[in-house]
Amino acid sequence: MSNASKVASETMSADQSMLTLDNLDVAIDSTPILRAVSLQLRKGEMVSLVGRNGAGKTTTLRAIMGLLPLQAGSIRLGNNIISNEPAHRRVDLGIGYMPEDRRLIPRYSVEENILMSSWMGGNKRNRDRLDEVYTLIPELKGFAQRQALSLSGGQQKLVALGRALLAGRDVLLLDEPFEGVAPALVQRINEIMSELSSRSDRTVLVSDSSISEGNSFYDRHVFIERGQISDFPAGH
Amino acid sequence: MLSLQRNVALGALALTIALAVLGAFVPEWILYTCALVLAKGLVVLGLCLLLRMNLVSFGQGLYYCAGAYICGLVSQMGISDAFFLTFLAALGSAVVGLILGLFLSGYRSVFFAMFNLALSMILYGVLLKSISLGGSDGVGVAAPTYLGYAPDGEMRLYVFFVFALAVAGASSVFAFLYTKSEMGLASASVKDCEIRLEYLGLSVRYLIIFNFVIASTLAGIGGALVAMVSGHIIPELAYWTTSGEFVFITVLSGPNGILSAFGATAVFETIRLVAGQNMPNSWQMLLGSFLLLSILFMPNGISGLFRRAKAPKPDAVGEGINND
Image (cartoon, rainbow over all chains, first blue to last red; front, side):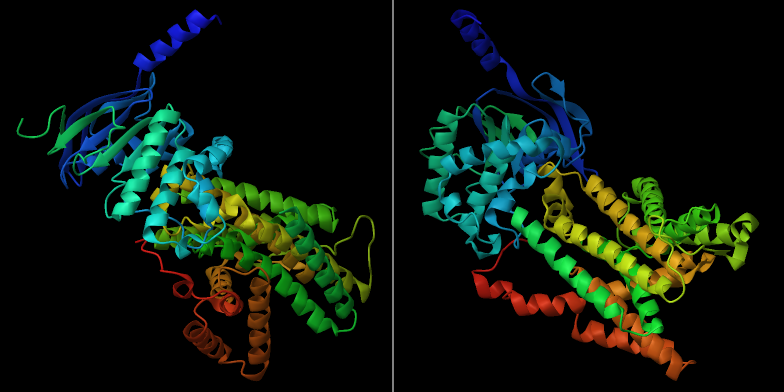
Protein backbone atom coordinates (compact mmCIF):
# COMPACT_ATOMS: atom_id res chain seq x y z
CA MET A 1 0.00 0.00 0.00
CA SER A 2 1.44 3.38 -0.97
CA ASN A 3 1.77 6.09 1.60
CA ALA A 4 -0.86 8.23 0.01
CA SER A 5 -3.50 5.53 -0.03
CA LYS A 6 -2.59 4.54 3.55
CA VAL A 7 -3.24 8.07 4.67
CA ALA A 8 -6.46 8.08 2.73
CA SER A 9 -7.70 4.88 4.31
CA GLU A 10 -6.79 6.15 7.76
CA THR A 11 -8.70 9.33 7.16
CA MET A 12 -11.63 7.33 5.99
CA SER A 13 -11.61 5.08 9.02
CA ALA A 14 -11.30 8.10 11.29
CA ASP A 15 -14.42 9.58 9.79
CA GLN A 16 -16.23 6.31 10.00
CA SER A 17 -18.55 5.80 12.93
CA MET A 18 -17.13 3.16 15.30
CA LEU A 19 -20.10 2.87 17.59
CA THR A 20 -23.57 3.90 16.50
CA LEU A 21 -26.68 3.98 18.66
CA ASP A 22 -29.76 4.34 16.54
CA ASN A 23 -33.00 5.31 18.26
CA LEU A 24 -32.63 3.11 21.32
CA ASP A 25 -35.62 2.57 23.55
CA VAL A 26 -34.87 0.78 26.80
CA ALA A 27 -37.24 0.02 29.65
CA ILE A 28 -36.55 -1.56 33.00
CA ASP A 29 -39.52 -3.43 34.47
CA SER A 30 -41.75 -1.67 31.91
CA THR A 31 -40.63 1.79 33.07
CA PRO A 32 -39.17 3.57 30.04
CA ILE A 33 -35.62 4.74 30.81
CA LEU A 34 -34.14 5.61 27.41
CA ARG A 35 -36.19 7.27 24.69
CA ALA A 36 -34.95 7.31 21.11
CA VAL A 37 -31.31 7.62 22.09
CA SER A 38 -29.04 8.14 19.10
CA LEU A 39 -25.32 8.69 19.27
CA GLN A 40 -22.39 8.29 16.91
CA LEU A 41 -18.84 7.84 18.12
CA ARG A 42 -15.99 8.00 15.65
CA LYS A 43 -12.94 5.81 15.84
CA GLY A 44 -10.50 7.12 18.44
CA GLU A 45 -12.96 9.60 19.84
CA MET A 46 -13.23 10.15 23.59
CA VAL A 47 -16.66 11.38 24.60
CA SER A 48 -18.19 12.09 27.97
CA LEU A 49 -21.84 11.34 28.60
CA VAL A 50 -22.98 13.87 31.17
CA GLY A 51 -26.17 13.67 33.15
CA ARG A 52 -27.65 13.70 36.61
CA ASN A 53 -28.34 10.61 38.66
CA GLY A 54 -31.19 8.69 37.09
CA ALA A 55 -30.83 10.40 33.72
CA GLY A 56 -29.98 7.13 31.99
CA LYS A 57 -26.17 7.13 31.77
CA THR A 58 -25.66 3.68 33.25
CA THR A 59 -28.62 2.33 31.30
CA THR A 60 -27.08 3.59 28.06
CA LEU A 61 -23.76 1.89 28.77
CA ARG A 62 -25.44 -1.32 29.90
CA ALA A 63 -27.58 -1.36 26.78
CA ILE A 64 -24.50 -0.98 24.57
CA MET A 65 -22.88 -3.84 26.47
CA GLY A 66 -25.95 -6.03 25.98
CA LEU A 67 -26.84 -6.27 29.66
CA LEU A 68 -30.29 -4.76 29.08
CA PRO A 69 -32.66 -5.67 26.25
CA LEU A 70 -33.65 -3.05 23.68
CA GLN A 71 -37.31 -2.23 23.17
CA ALA A 72 -36.50 -0.59 19.87
CA GLY A 73 -33.56 0.68 17.88
CA SER A 74 -30.22 -0.85 17.02
CA ILE A 75 -26.55 -0.71 17.95
CA ARG A 76 -23.76 -0.94 15.37
CA LEU A 77 -20.10 -1.59 15.90
CA GLY A 78 -18.37 -0.47 12.73
CA ASN A 79 -20.72 -1.75 10.05
CA ASN A 80 -22.04 -4.69 12.05
CA ILE A 81 -25.30 -4.64 13.92
CA ILE A 82 -24.54 -6.06 17.36
CA SER A 83 -27.85 -5.48 19.13
CA ASN A 84 -28.75 -9.15 18.80
CA GLU A 85 -25.47 -10.46 20.16
CA PRO A 86 -25.30 -11.59 23.80
CA ALA A 87 -23.04 -9.55 26.09
CA HIS A 88 -20.14 -12.01 26.07
CA ARG A 89 -20.05 -11.95 22.26
CA ARG A 90 -19.76 -8.16 22.31
CA VAL A 91 -16.53 -8.57 24.25
CA ASP A 92 -15.29 -10.89 21.46
CA LEU A 93 -16.09 -8.05 19.08
CA GLY A 94 -13.90 -5.64 21.04
CA ILE A 95 -16.00 -3.77 23.61
CA GLY A 96 -14.77 -3.40 27.18
CA TYR A 97 -16.95 -2.24 30.08
CA MET A 98 -16.11 -0.90 33.50
CA PRO A 99 -19.13 -0.88 35.81
CA GLU A 100 -19.62 1.83 38.40
CA ASP A 101 -19.14 -0.60 41.26
CA ARG A 102 -15.82 -2.30 40.74
CA ARG A 103 -16.96 -5.89 40.96
CA LEU A 104 -13.60 -7.57 41.29
CA ILE A 105 -13.35 -11.14 42.49
CA PRO A 106 -11.98 -10.73 46.02
CA ARG A 107 -10.12 -14.03 46.29
CA TYR A 108 -8.40 -13.87 42.91
CA SER A 109 -5.17 -12.03 42.30
CA VAL A 110 -5.13 -8.63 40.63
CA GLU A 111 -3.63 -10.11 37.48
CA GLU A 112 -6.24 -12.87 37.37
CA ASN A 113 -8.93 -10.22 37.68
CA ILE A 114 -7.43 -8.21 34.83
CA LEU A 115 -7.04 -11.30 32.64
CA MET A 116 -10.59 -12.60 33.15
CA SER A 117 -11.76 -11.56 29.71
CA SER A 118 -9.03 -13.70 28.15
CA TRP A 119 -10.07 -16.89 29.87
CA MET A 120 -12.36 -18.34 27.29
CA GLY A 121 -13.03 -18.86 23.64
CA GLY A 122 -11.93 -16.34 21.06
CA ASN A 123 -10.69 -13.87 23.66
CA LYS A 124 -7.40 -15.56 24.42
CA ARG A 125 -5.63 -12.98 22.30
CA ASN A 126 -6.68 -10.29 24.80
CA ARG A 127 -3.73 -11.51 26.85
CA ASP A 128 -1.38 -9.84 24.40
CA ARG A 129 -2.62 -6.49 25.67
CA LEU A 130 -1.55 -7.10 29.28
CA ASP A 131 1.71 -5.23 28.66
CA GLU A 132 -0.20 -2.27 27.27
CA VAL A 133 -2.38 -2.23 30.41
CA TYR A 134 0.72 -2.28 32.63
CA THR A 135 2.29 0.50 30.59
CA LEU A 136 -0.77 2.70 30.93
CA ILE A 137 -1.33 1.90 34.62
CA PRO A 138 2.13 0.94 35.96
CA GLU A 139 0.96 0.72 39.57
CA LEU A 140 -1.04 -2.40 38.66
CA LYS A 141 2.17 -4.28 38.02
CA GLY A 142 3.22 -3.53 41.60
CA PHE A 143 0.32 -5.42 43.11
CA ALA A 144 -0.37 -7.87 40.31
CA GLN A 145 0.02 -10.92 42.52
CA ARG A 146 -1.94 -9.63 45.51
CA GLN A 147 -5.48 -10.75 46.19
CA ALA A 148 -7.99 -8.14 45.05
CA LEU A 149 -9.54 -8.01 48.52
CA SER A 150 -6.34 -6.64 49.99
CA LEU A 151 -6.48 -3.47 47.87
CA SER A 152 -8.04 -0.16 48.80
CA GLY A 153 -11.17 0.99 47.01
CA GLY A 154 -9.17 3.36 44.81
CA GLN A 155 -6.66 0.70 43.82
CA GLN A 156 -9.56 -1.58 42.99
CA LYS A 157 -10.94 1.10 40.71
CA LEU A 158 -7.66 1.05 38.79
CA VAL A 159 -7.84 -2.73 38.54
CA ALA A 160 -11.36 -2.50 37.14
CA LEU A 161 -10.09 0.07 34.63
CA GLY A 162 -7.22 -2.21 33.63
CA ARG A 163 -9.62 -5.12 33.27
CA ALA A 164 -11.87 -3.09 30.98
CA LEU A 165 -8.83 -1.95 28.94
CA LEU A 166 -7.79 -5.55 28.39
CA ALA A 167 -11.27 -6.54 27.27
CA GLY A 168 -11.96 -3.51 25.12
CA ARG A 169 -9.92 -3.75 21.96
CA ASP A 170 -11.84 -1.10 20.05
CA VAL A 171 -14.41 0.44 22.36
CA LEU A 172 -14.25 1.26 26.06
CA LEU A 173 -17.32 2.05 28.15
CA LEU A 174 -16.48 3.57 31.52
CA ASP A 175 -19.32 4.10 33.96
CA GLU A 176 -18.57 7.02 36.29
CA PRO A 177 -14.87 6.33 36.80
CA PHE A 178 -14.57 9.48 38.93
CA GLU A 179 -17.50 8.75 41.21
CA GLY A 180 -16.75 8.19 44.89
CA VAL A 181 -13.01 8.50 44.33
CA ALA A 182 -10.55 10.53 46.41
CA PRO A 183 -9.18 13.71 44.72
CA ALA A 184 -5.68 12.28 44.33
CA LEU A 185 -7.07 9.31 42.46
CA VAL A 186 -9.31 11.50 40.31
CA GLN A 187 -6.08 13.22 39.24
CA ARG A 188 -4.45 9.86 38.53
CA ILE A 189 -7.41 8.60 36.49
CA ASN A 190 -7.35 11.87 34.55
CA GLU A 191 -3.71 11.25 33.69
CA ILE A 192 -4.47 7.72 32.55
CA MET A 193 -7.35 8.99 30.41
CA SER A 194 -5.18 11.66 28.77
CA GLU A 195 -2.55 9.12 27.99
CA LEU A 196 -5.17 6.74 26.69
CA SER A 197 -6.60 9.42 24.42
CA SER A 198 -3.20 10.28 22.97
CA ARG A 199 -1.73 6.79 22.72
CA SER A 200 -4.60 4.57 21.77
CA ASP A 201 -7.14 4.71 18.98
CA ARG A 202 -9.88 3.20 21.09
CA THR A 203 -13.27 4.82 21.06
CA VAL A 204 -14.10 5.73 24.66
CA LEU A 205 -17.46 6.65 26.16
CA VAL A 206 -17.28 7.90 29.75
CA SER A 207 -20.29 8.67 31.89
CA ASP A 208 -20.05 11.43 34.46
CA SER A 209 -22.45 13.41 36.60
CA SER A 210 -20.90 16.76 35.68
CA ILE A 211 -18.36 18.36 33.35
CA SER A 212 -15.26 18.53 35.45
CA GLU A 213 -12.74 21.30 34.86
CA GLY A 214 -9.50 20.41 33.22
CA ASN A 215 -10.59 17.23 31.47
CA SER A 216 -9.19 18.43 28.18
CA PHE A 217 -8.84 14.93 26.84
CA TYR A 218 -12.50 14.73 25.85
CA ASP A 219 -13.21 15.38 22.20
CA ARG A 220 -16.73 16.42 23.07
CA HIS A 221 -19.52 16.15 25.62
CA VAL A 222 -23.01 14.83 25.08
CA PHE A 223 -25.77 15.35 27.59
CA ILE A 224 -28.46 13.03 28.75
CA GLU A 225 -31.58 14.16 30.54
CA ARG A 226 -34.58 11.98 31.34
CA GLY A 227 -33.44 9.35 28.90
CA GLN A 228 -32.89 11.68 25.98
CA ILE A 229 -29.59 12.74 24.50
CA SER A 230 -28.68 16.21 23.28
CA ASP A 231 -25.53 18.08 22.36
CA PHE A 232 -26.26 20.80 24.90
CA PRO A 233 -26.81 20.73 28.65
CA ALA A 234 -30.41 20.87 29.88
CA GLY A 235 -31.86 24.40 29.91
CA HIS A 236 -29.88 25.61 26.86
CA MET B 1 1.89 -24.42 36.28
CA LEU B 2 3.94 -27.23 34.80
CA SER B 3 5.67 -27.92 38.08
CA LEU B 4 2.28 -27.81 39.83
CA GLN B 5 1.02 -30.42 37.38
CA ARG B 6 4.05 -32.59 38.00
CA ASN B 7 3.88 -32.27 41.78
CA VAL B 8 0.17 -33.05 41.92
CA ALA B 9 0.54 -36.01 39.58
CA LEU B 10 3.47 -37.36 41.61
CA GLY B 11 1.61 -36.84 44.88
CA ALA B 12 -1.45 -38.63 43.57
CA LEU B 13 0.69 -41.45 42.22
CA ALA B 14 2.42 -41.89 45.57
CA LEU B 15 -0.89 -41.89 47.43
CA THR B 16 -2.39 -44.36 44.96
CA ILE B 17 0.55 -46.74 45.31
CA ALA B 18 0.50 -46.45 49.11
CA LEU B 19 -3.22 -47.25 49.21
CA ALA B 20 -2.77 -50.12 46.75
CA VAL B 21 -0.07 -51.65 48.95
CA LEU B 22 -2.20 -51.11 52.05
CA GLY B 23 -5.11 -52.76 50.27
CA ALA B 24 -3.20 -56.04 50.06
CA PHE B 25 -3.33 -56.42 53.82
CA VAL B 26 -6.95 -55.67 54.65
CA PRO B 27 -9.89 -58.08 54.78
CA GLU B 28 -12.15 -58.41 51.78
CA TRP B 29 -15.12 -56.56 53.24
CA ILE B 30 -12.99 -53.47 53.80
CA LEU B 31 -11.61 -53.73 50.28
CA TYR B 32 -15.14 -53.95 48.91
CA THR B 33 -16.25 -50.91 50.93
CA CYS B 34 -13.20 -48.99 49.73
CA ALA B 35 -14.00 -49.80 46.09
CA LEU B 36 -17.53 -48.56 46.72
CA VAL B 37 -16.17 -45.38 48.31
CA LEU B 38 -13.96 -44.72 45.27
CA ALA B 39 -16.91 -45.20 42.92
CA LYS B 40 -19.28 -42.96 44.86
CA GLY B 41 -16.53 -40.46 45.64
CA LEU B 42 -16.22 -39.76 41.90
CA VAL B 43 -19.91 -38.85 41.73
CA VAL B 44 -19.44 -36.57 44.75
CA LEU B 45 -16.38 -34.98 43.12
CA GLY B 46 -18.57 -34.00 40.16
CA LEU B 47 -21.22 -32.60 42.48
CA CYS B 48 -18.54 -30.54 44.23
CA LEU B 49 -17.63 -28.94 40.89
CA LEU B 50 -21.30 -28.00 40.43
CA LEU B 51 -21.60 -26.80 44.02
CA ARG B 52 -18.69 -24.42 43.38
CA MET B 53 -21.07 -22.73 40.93
CA ASN B 54 -23.89 -22.84 43.48
CA LEU B 55 -25.67 -25.56 41.52
CA VAL B 56 -27.01 -28.63 43.28
CA SER B 57 -28.22 -31.57 41.25
CA PHE B 58 -30.73 -33.75 43.06
CA GLY B 59 -30.62 -36.21 40.17
CA GLN B 60 -26.98 -37.16 39.82
CA GLY B 61 -28.16 -40.77 40.13
CA LEU B 62 -29.21 -40.46 36.50
CA TYR B 63 -25.62 -40.31 35.20
CA TYR B 64 -24.42 -42.77 37.82
CA CYS B 65 -27.11 -45.20 36.67
CA ALA B 66 -26.44 -44.46 32.98
CA GLY B 67 -22.74 -45.28 33.45
CA ALA B 68 -23.59 -48.46 35.36
CA TYR B 69 -26.10 -49.66 32.75
CA ILE B 70 -23.78 -48.89 29.82
CA CYS B 71 -21.08 -50.89 31.56
CA GLY B 72 -23.46 -53.71 32.53
CA LEU B 73 -25.24 -54.05 29.20
CA VAL B 74 -22.03 -53.98 27.17
CA SER B 75 -20.51 -56.57 29.49
CA GLN B 76 -23.55 -58.75 28.69
CA MET B 77 -22.38 -58.74 25.08
CA GLY B 78 -19.21 -60.49 26.15
CA ILE B 79 -16.93 -57.46 26.38
CA SER B 80 -15.39 -57.50 29.82
CA ASP B 81 -12.36 -55.22 29.63
CA ALA B 82 -12.56 -52.83 32.58
CA PHE B 83 -10.70 -50.02 30.78
CA PHE B 84 -12.95 -50.20 27.75
CA LEU B 85 -16.15 -50.46 29.82
CA THR B 86 -15.17 -47.50 31.98
CA PHE B 87 -14.28 -45.45 28.92
CA LEU B 88 -17.59 -46.32 27.28
CA ALA B 89 -19.54 -45.42 30.44
CA ALA B 90 -17.69 -42.10 30.69
CA LEU B 91 -18.39 -41.31 27.06
CA GLY B 92 -22.05 -42.32 27.29
CA SER B 93 -22.76 -40.32 30.43
CA ALA B 94 -20.90 -37.35 28.97
CA VAL B 95 -23.20 -37.41 25.95
CA VAL B 96 -26.27 -37.70 28.18
CA GLY B 97 -24.90 -34.88 30.33
CA LEU B 98 -24.30 -32.70 27.27
CA ILE B 99 -27.81 -33.21 25.88
CA LEU B 100 -29.55 -32.61 29.22
CA GLY B 101 -27.07 -29.84 30.12
CA LEU B 102 -28.14 -27.85 27.07
CA PHE B 103 -31.63 -27.81 28.54
CA LEU B 104 -30.75 -27.56 32.24
CA SER B 105 -28.24 -24.72 31.84
CA GLY B 106 -31.16 -22.30 31.59
CA TYR B 107 -32.18 -23.04 35.18
CA ARG B 108 -30.76 -22.22 38.59
CA SER B 109 -31.28 -23.05 42.25
CA VAL B 110 -34.25 -25.22 43.12
CA PHE B 111 -35.40 -25.54 39.50
CA PHE B 112 -32.04 -26.91 38.45
CA ALA B 113 -32.06 -29.33 41.39
CA MET B 114 -35.61 -30.51 40.78
CA PHE B 115 -35.35 -30.85 36.99
CA ASN B 116 -32.41 -33.15 37.54
CA LEU B 117 -34.44 -35.11 40.07
CA ALA B 118 -37.37 -35.38 37.66
CA LEU B 119 -35.14 -36.58 34.81
CA SER B 120 -33.50 -39.22 36.99
CA MET B 121 -36.91 -40.48 38.12
CA ILE B 122 -37.95 -40.79 34.48
CA LEU B 123 -34.91 -43.00 33.83
CA TYR B 124 -35.79 -45.00 36.95
CA GLY B 125 -39.34 -45.49 35.71
CA VAL B 126 -38.22 -46.52 32.23
CA LEU B 127 -35.69 -49.05 33.58
CA LEU B 128 -38.25 -50.46 36.01
CA LYS B 129 -40.68 -51.18 33.17
CA SER B 130 -38.15 -52.38 30.57
CA ILE B 131 -38.20 -56.16 30.63
CA SER B 132 -35.36 -56.30 28.11
CA LEU B 133 -33.17 -54.28 30.50
CA GLY B 134 -33.95 -56.56 33.41
CA GLY B 135 -36.86 -54.61 34.88
CA SER B 136 -36.82 -54.27 38.64
CA ASP B 137 -34.46 -57.26 38.96
CA GLY B 138 -31.73 -55.50 37.08
CA VAL B 139 -28.93 -57.16 35.14
CA GLY B 140 -25.86 -59.11 36.16
CA VAL B 141 -22.45 -57.76 35.23
CA ALA B 142 -19.67 -60.10 34.14
CA ALA B 143 -16.43 -60.07 36.13
CA PRO B 144 -14.09 -57.51 34.53
CA THR B 145 -10.82 -58.35 32.83
CA TYR B 146 -7.83 -56.05 32.45
CA LEU B 147 -6.25 -55.87 28.99
CA GLY B 148 -6.60 -59.61 28.67
CA TYR B 149 -5.70 -60.42 32.28
CA ALA B 150 -8.52 -62.18 34.11
CA PRO B 151 -7.83 -62.46 37.84
CA ASP B 152 -9.65 -65.17 39.73
CA GLY B 153 -10.51 -66.08 43.28
CA GLU B 154 -9.26 -63.71 45.98
CA MET B 155 -7.27 -61.64 43.51
CA ARG B 156 -10.39 -60.55 41.67
CA LEU B 157 -11.48 -57.96 44.23
CA TYR B 158 -7.96 -56.74 44.95
CA VAL B 159 -7.13 -56.16 41.28
CA PHE B 160 -10.39 -54.30 40.86
CA PHE B 161 -9.58 -52.18 43.89
CA VAL B 162 -6.24 -51.20 42.34
CA PHE B 163 -7.99 -50.42 39.06
CA ALA B 164 -10.58 -48.26 40.85
CA LEU B 165 -7.79 -46.49 42.74
CA ALA B 166 -6.02 -45.69 39.48
CA VAL B 167 -9.22 -44.39 37.87
CA ALA B 168 -10.11 -42.29 40.92
CA GLY B 169 -6.53 -41.03 41.21
CA ALA B 170 -6.38 -39.95 37.57
CA SER B 171 -9.81 -38.32 37.82
CA SER B 172 -8.78 -36.46 40.97
CA VAL B 173 -5.62 -35.11 39.37
CA PHE B 174 -7.66 -33.96 36.41
CA ALA B 175 -10.28 -32.36 38.68
CA PHE B 176 -7.64 -30.61 40.77
CA LEU B 177 -5.81 -29.15 37.78
CA TYR B 178 -9.13 -28.18 36.27
CA THR B 179 -10.15 -26.19 39.34
CA LYS B 180 -6.81 -24.35 39.17
CA SER B 181 -7.15 -23.64 35.44
CA GLU B 182 -8.67 -20.51 33.97
CA MET B 183 -11.86 -22.38 33.10
CA GLY B 184 -12.01 -23.60 36.69
CA LEU B 185 -11.47 -20.11 38.09
CA ALA B 186 -14.09 -18.70 35.74
CA SER B 187 -16.55 -21.42 36.79
CA ALA B 188 -16.05 -20.76 40.47
CA SER B 189 -16.86 -17.08 39.93
CA VAL B 190 -20.25 -17.80 38.38
CA LYS B 191 -21.94 -17.95 41.76
CA ASP B 192 -21.00 -14.40 42.79
CA CYS B 193 -22.19 -12.50 39.78
CA GLU B 194 -23.23 -13.88 36.41
CA ILE B 195 -23.50 -10.49 34.73
CA ARG B 196 -19.87 -9.73 35.51
CA LEU B 197 -18.78 -12.78 33.55
CA GLU B 198 -20.96 -11.82 30.62
CA TYR B 199 -19.48 -8.34 30.26
CA LEU B 200 -16.03 -9.84 30.53
CA GLY B 201 -16.72 -12.06 27.56
CA LEU B 202 -17.39 -15.32 29.38
CA SER B 203 -20.57 -17.21 28.60
CA VAL B 204 -22.16 -18.39 31.84
CA ARG B 205 -24.29 -20.88 29.97
CA TYR B 206 -21.26 -22.44 28.33
CA LEU B 207 -19.47 -22.67 31.69
CA ILE B 208 -22.45 -24.39 33.28
CA ILE B 209 -22.75 -26.90 30.44
CA PHE B 210 -19.01 -27.54 30.55
CA ASN B 211 -19.01 -28.29 34.28
CA PHE B 212 -22.21 -30.26 34.00
CA VAL B 213 -20.64 -32.53 31.39
CA ILE B 214 -17.58 -33.06 33.59
CA ALA B 215 -19.83 -33.86 36.57
CA SER B 216 -21.94 -36.33 34.60
CA THR B 217 -18.83 -37.96 33.15
CA LEU B 218 -17.43 -38.47 36.66
CA ALA B 219 -20.80 -39.85 37.78
CA GLY B 220 -20.82 -42.22 34.80
CA ILE B 221 -17.33 -43.47 35.66
CA GLY B 222 -18.48 -43.97 39.25
CA GLY B 223 -21.47 -45.91 37.94
CA ALA B 224 -19.26 -48.19 35.84
CA LEU B 225 -17.05 -48.90 38.86
CA VAL B 226 -20.02 -49.72 41.07
CA ALA B 227 -21.44 -52.01 38.38
CA MET B 228 -18.16 -53.93 38.14
CA VAL B 229 -17.56 -54.24 41.86
CA SER B 230 -21.11 -55.25 42.79
CA GLY B 231 -21.59 -57.45 39.71
CA HIS B 232 -25.19 -56.32 39.47
CA ILE B 233 -27.08 -53.25 38.35
CA ILE B 234 -30.59 -52.24 39.35
CA PRO B 235 -32.88 -49.29 38.54
CA GLU B 236 -32.46 -48.02 42.13
CA LEU B 237 -29.16 -46.49 41.00
CA ALA B 238 -31.30 -43.73 39.48
CA TYR B 239 -33.78 -43.56 42.35
CA TRP B 240 -34.02 -40.23 44.13
CA THR B 241 -32.68 -41.52 47.43
CA THR B 242 -29.44 -42.49 45.68
CA SER B 243 -29.11 -38.94 44.38
CA GLY B 244 -30.03 -37.58 47.80
CA GLU B 245 -27.23 -39.64 49.32
CA PHE B 246 -24.75 -38.01 46.93
CA VAL B 247 -25.98 -34.54 47.86
CA PHE B 248 -25.69 -35.51 51.54
CA ILE B 249 -22.06 -36.55 51.05
CA THR B 250 -21.32 -33.43 48.98
CA VAL B 251 -22.56 -31.20 51.78
CA LEU B 252 -20.41 -33.18 54.17
CA SER B 253 -17.41 -32.79 51.87
CA GLY B 254 -17.80 -29.10 51.04
CA PRO B 255 -17.23 -27.76 47.54
CA ASN B 256 -13.54 -26.91 47.62
CA GLY B 257 -11.69 -30.14 48.16
CA ILE B 258 -10.75 -33.07 45.99
CA LEU B 259 -9.64 -35.57 48.61
CA SER B 260 -12.45 -34.43 50.88
CA ALA B 261 -14.96 -35.80 48.37
CA PHE B 262 -13.55 -39.27 48.94
CA GLY B 263 -13.03 -38.63 52.65
CA ALA B 264 -16.66 -37.64 53.11
CA THR B 265 -17.80 -40.69 51.14
CA ALA B 266 -15.67 -42.88 53.38
CA VAL B 267 -17.15 -41.30 56.51
CA PHE B 268 -20.66 -41.74 55.14
CA GLU B 269 -20.18 -45.37 54.18
CA THR B 270 -18.52 -46.16 57.51
CA ILE B 271 -21.35 -44.64 59.50
CA ARG B 272 -23.88 -46.47 57.40
CA LEU B 273 -22.01 -49.74 57.78
CA VAL B 274 -21.53 -49.45 61.53
CA ALA B 275 -24.95 -47.99 62.23
CA GLY B 276 -26.65 -50.45 59.89
CA GLN B 277 -25.17 -53.36 61.82
CA ASN B 278 -25.72 -52.04 65.33
CA MET B 279 -29.03 -50.27 64.98
CA PRO B 280 -30.65 -51.70 61.84
CA ASN B 281 -34.00 -49.98 62.41
CA SER B 282 -32.83 -46.49 63.18
CA TRP B 283 -29.56 -45.98 61.29
CA GLN B 284 -31.11 -43.21 59.18
CA MET B 285 -31.68 -41.28 62.39
CA LEU B 286 -28.01 -41.53 63.21
CA LEU B 287 -27.03 -40.37 59.72
CA GLY B 288 -29.46 -37.48 59.96
CA SER B 289 -28.10 -36.37 63.31
CA PHE B 290 -24.59 -36.64 61.97
CA LEU B 291 -25.37 -34.41 58.99
CA LEU B 292 -27.09 -31.91 61.26
CA LEU B 293 -24.06 -31.70 63.52
CA SER B 294 -21.64 -31.45 60.64
CA ILE B 295 -23.58 -28.57 59.09
CA LEU B 296 -23.66 -26.79 62.44
CA PHE B 297 -19.99 -27.23 63.22
CA MET B 298 -18.40 -27.41 59.78
CA PRO B 299 -20.50 -25.29 57.44
CA ASN B 300 -17.91 -25.64 54.68
CA GLY B 301 -17.67 -29.37 55.08
CA ILE B 302 -14.53 -31.39 55.55
CA SER B 303 -12.66 -29.34 52.92
CA GLY B 304 -13.48 -26.18 54.91
CA LEU B 305 -11.63 -27.52 57.94
CA PHE B 306 -8.34 -27.64 56.08
CA ARG B 307 -8.90 -24.38 54.25
CA ARG B 308 -9.52 -22.45 57.43
CA ALA B 309 -6.29 -23.65 58.90
CA LYS B 310 -4.30 -22.52 55.86
CA ALA B 311 -5.79 -19.18 54.81
CA PRO B 312 -6.27 -16.16 57.03
CA LYS B 313 -9.73 -14.65 57.15
CA PRO B 314 -10.37 -11.98 54.51
CA ASP B 315 -10.83 -9.12 56.96
CA ALA B 316 -7.48 -9.89 58.50
CA VAL B 317 -5.65 -9.22 55.24
CA GLY B 318 -6.49 -5.66 54.36
CA GLU B 319 -9.22 -3.13 54.26
CA GLY B 320 -11.78 -5.67 53.23
CA ILE B 321 -13.72 -5.47 50.06
CA ASN B 322 -16.61 -3.28 49.27
CA ASN B 323 -17.92 -5.34 46.49
CA ASP B 324 -21.66 -5.82 46.87
